[in-house]
Image (cartoon, rainbow, N blue to C red):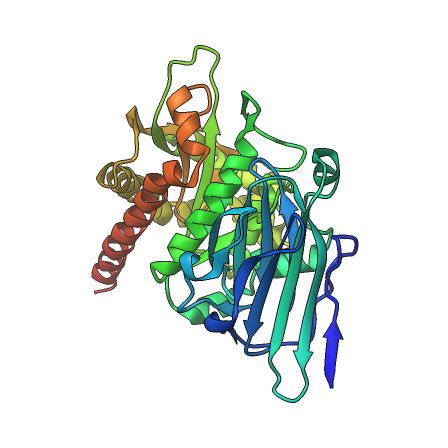
Length: 400
């Protein structure tokens, strides 16, 4: 007998974690995204076993998102899966350690009509079916966004540090700037928060394909405080922290990408500011400073920064070189320094990447499409790979 597991219908209820574990393999030959009767389409994914999942829609651009813990996409392709007029594009990959995502770009306002997972008790296999139906613009807008479920979000973007450490490869914290009530820069209806989320998700997929472990500080349009962004990265055992932004200026003259480090002047007081704003147990990875006063905490962070500051400097150089190598548009002064609160962490090399300016027409157009963002994604991955090799060699030399 087939048992029906209804995980999410019409985005009305939050998803609760199911007691399934392990990796589900996609049966590519039996899976697809096809036209359905009326102005609808259907996603049908055949999996080797049931896994926790959820589905929701996002806007600007309109897209349908399916998250899983976890699906092996090997053998799948856009051409092999996509056969629906309502879906203009398809991509899938790793969202973070242990998490997978499929994104469908929608050709109009299509909402989730039904969503279900059916499990065959005899074979243990599962089938996910999601039907999208065309609705009015107002109805689509009213139903966008991930279901409110803090447990899912925390598990998805903040895996256990020990799990990350055991995995071995470089763990990259990817921080899409702004989000939720903080949309960031705005120009011609385009918001920095939305574009950086798209870029962050694409970068996470590319980082995973390159054999590194991505950790997102946010995976939807939600507000995450600066302190929590650093906490998420630290809890995941991140080796490096990249914050993604795209500014807008009144004079419309600036253009191209640049990489920011914490300025030397800001470094002088960074430890004091961290000690004032963060819990003692969340200042340095692997070290609980609970009960210690500001002086001790500050001294220990300053010592840690003696190591991480030069590593951050080399990281910035590698990122600029990678962006240039992959053909990304660079600012006339691509290496910069400033007082940036999101770069205050003492225990991991950190950089803020200003990927372009929404106030520049060409930058804004490039950042608004996957194709335009591709050189930035490729450049950042190339830079990370080069920096990781250089950093590992230098640290090995210092140990001798």
